[in-house]
Every structure is written in C-alpha cells, then in structure tokens.
Image (tube, rainbow, N blue to C red; front, side, top):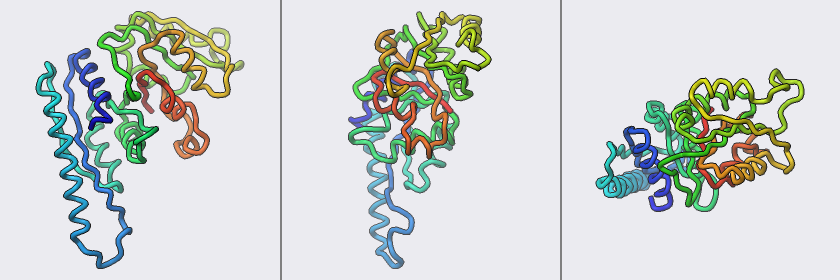
Length: 267
C-alpha cells in the first residue's frame, strides 16, 4: 500500500478535479500456480495461500478507508482476491466500467509481473484509458501544460479523444511529432488535421515537429516534456504487439520506465 500511495493521491486529485467518483480496488493476490502442486498436496497449503490473499486484501482495504475518510470526494472500496491465472479477466470485469484507471508505474524496483498484468488487463481486456503515475510524481489539481505524442495511430487518436476533458482545460497542448513520414497524407502539414480537430473542440493546441536526434523515441519525448515543463503526456499504448514490445522494448515500455510525469494512454 505504501509503495502505491502516490497513485492513490493522484486518483484523489483527479476525482476532485473532474467532480467524479473514486472506486479503489483492494487486491489480495493468491500466488498459487495451477499445476505447481503435485496431486495429493496438503489442502491446507492451498487454503493458507487463499487466506493470506484475503488478509492482504483486507489490510489494503483498511488502509484505503483510513486514507479516504477525511476526503471531500465520493468514494468506495472494492476488496477482492484473485489468483494469478485468473487475474486479467477478474480485473477486467470491474475495470471496464471505469472512465479511467489510475495505476503506479509497472516497471522498476519492487515491481513484479503482476503489475504489468494489471496494466494490460485495463488496456487490452477492460478497454479503458490508464493514467500511470511514476514513483514520486504528483498530479497537479490544475493540469496546465500537456504534451500529446502523435504518430497518426488509432491508439494515439483514441487516447486523445479520451483525454479531451483534460485537454480542453489546459493552457497549452503541444502536439509532438517525431520524424513524420515523408510520404504520409499530412506530409505538407504534420499534425495539422489533429490540431484543427482539437482547436474546434476548444483546445489551445500547437504542433512541434522534432527530429529523432537520440537513439530512442522515448528519450526525445522525455527531453521535450522537460523543455515544455509539461504536467502530463498523452500517448497511444503498444503500437506493435505486446510480445514484440516485451522483446524489443518499444516506445511504450521505454516511456513507462523512464518518464517522470504522469502518462495517459489507451489501446
């Protein structure tokens, strides 16, 4: 719970900002692996794992209730337990009814495979936008400056549509394009069509076209976020297959590993 408290703080800030309702899923994870125990294994071992998961869920629930009692927002908690094998469908069942899911960074010290699986459950099975909060990052009550990573993909456009309530309230939205294709439909005006769409929605938008002067797209974006003093970045998630990304890295994983501001993404 302590390791993820910054994500809860960001969820509270976003809930207050949007006059929304906050539901916190308090997960206890049963790490029993199907087929791991041979036939005839003492059933008490399996029961102990389940009871520990239930105890973990209750401990998180108690801590969250204590944290939220003094807040001036509508909130509820949902204590659940799940096995690793059934984690994705069980979480997706709850998350699909959310407008946005707020999660801590899934990679780095103290993070296990389950953190990445929770993120993917929201993105791919729940089909809901996810706001990832890096360690020690905060979500300001007023989001003034936003960087939008634009690569003409359906994933990026879907995230931008989901982010419209945030973009419309921002002082500046910077549509950032890195090495636009020379033969694309927008080659004469990269980002122009998107900028026009956003301006018609009341967004104060501008376009930045950047060269890939560093080995990774994520490095160029990270530097640009710093230059613009952005509060948040909006981008599509996993333009390639997740299997390919897990082997080669990719902009999504690189951004989640290194960026120091919140990331709003969807797939």
